[in-house]
Image 1 (tube, rainbow, N blue to C red):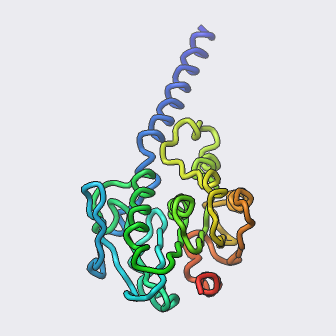
Image 2: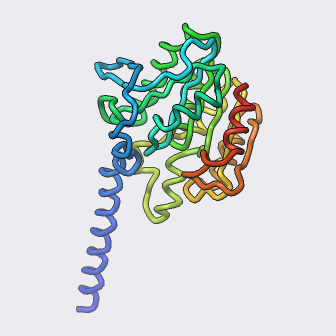
Image 3: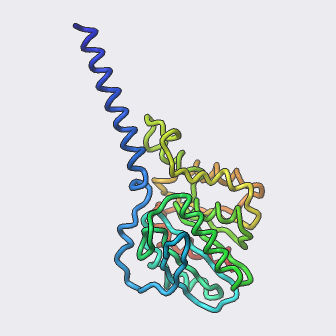
Length: 255
């Protein structure tokens, strides 16, 4: 009787664990991407990119400038909210803000392959119109931006609250789960860092509760040439844009 109870409890524990793994595996896209906050627009899009039969709709600021800036935002970020700030901070650049698939008014559904593919097409469409193209990637967008910079001649690359691997970040939140086996959305930026040939700035939030300092440090060590690094001491993962050090750091780097 005793061993039967133990066996039953073990079976139930195994089923519970397997169910948790299945939940993580099949629900990961909804855990990684949060487009719902971006669906209500305050400004109509004025720029489109058509790729793989889908239309992505975004905004262009400071049109006609010789140099360009592409921005890739966080997983729940309303990038349209950066329009006025970026236009003011970078008056010498034409700024392209293009929401991911499924975000704002863009068609489709997001996943890592699609986001990187769209970023490459965006660069290829924009670069002939400009002498140089710089890139900013924030949080999730840092994983997109670094893969773009590894494959295209980006002028400068700024990574805000970046991580070395989304898998490793997720593992810290689910230490008992086999995250490496389950993850399809991986964004392993450390694999691409050594292929980046342009100047790089890493901007870290001193009170970041999502991306640990170690994750940014490992990424920094993955570049062939040591990147510039800056910490915004009092900022956390979601508020770094509210601090003047963020603006000053980006403005100086992207002069």
